[in-house]
Structures are given as structure tokens and as C-alpha cells.
Length: 202
Image (tube, rainbow, N blue to C red):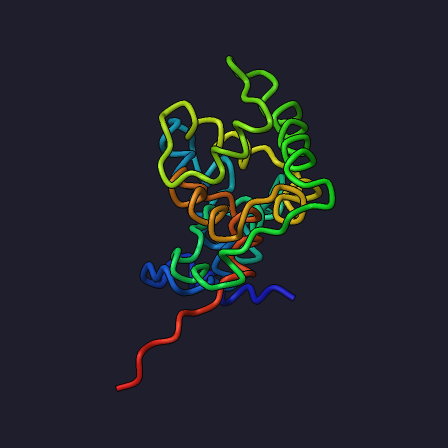
């Protein structure tokens, strides 16, 4: 159950940025509504006429027009992946090799390229797309491809990247940082595998 009082509190008084904290669901609702309000202003719209922010029921309360979303805020708000150090451990560094080996991994990435990058000029092959995801640095074109992949990917395919792609958790988290992936459902997926680094005693 969503705590509306917390959503309103987070809207008007958002907590400071903390890359090591996973935000609460209420915070994501507040963040998404602030993003919608700000986007409306940027495009020259009227937040009051559109019932956004304090002009809608979610933030303004029951006396305001009903706040309507065209998608779940926890899936659409912008969210950063946890710091890369959270994925830098032995299991995070070890890729899962699918039963068919690299041939199967390359075929899997070829299917992702066909499904999500079909309209792109010079669409990458399966091996090249896999290489992009394993790279610590990306060219502008490669970054655009990775960004588009994660902007469009559906959960069914997202959840198959680790068991089918022969890429490590660390590599996927790293490329998400490099390509500045902020899609909340994608970053929530990678964040679930993060492990807080142990701090030296003393």
C-alpha cells in the first residue's frame, strides 16, 4: 500500500542524493511527479491545467483533480544504478556461460539487436553488441546503441541477459554507468544484485 503522506513529504522535501541508498517506492512516486511537473514547464505547458504536482490529487490532496499516470512511476522514474563497487565481488565478476557457449550468447545478442535496435543505422551484430556490454569505454555510437537497448528492452529479455549472454553482473553494471542508464525498472533489476562493500575495521 502506498503511503500518500510520505509521497507528499518526499515531493516537497526530497532527500539528498545518496548513490548508496535505494529509494523507497513513495520516493519514486514523488520523484516521477516532480519530473512530470518540470517537463511540463520545459515544454511550455500549464501544470495547473494538467493537474500536475500540487495541482493534482496525489500531491495536492483529495480536493484536487485526480492524478493520472500512463505507467507505473516505480518503472518510469529516473534512477541511478548503485555504485560499481557494489558489483565488484567474485560472483559479480564471474559470467554465466549458457549451455550453447559463446555461439548461443552471440545468437541471444543478435536477437536483442533485431528486436530493439532494428531501426538504427549500422545495427550491431550479436558479437558486437555483446562486446559493447563488456566494454569499460564506449564510442559515441556504441553508447547510443547501449542506451537504446536498455531504453526499450522488455523484462523478459532483460532477465535473460545474465544467464544467456555470457556477460558478468559487473560488466552489465559498468556499462549501465558508462551509458548513464536511468530507467527505473532496469536499474532496480541490476540493483537487486548489489552487495554493499565491506569496510575495513577500525
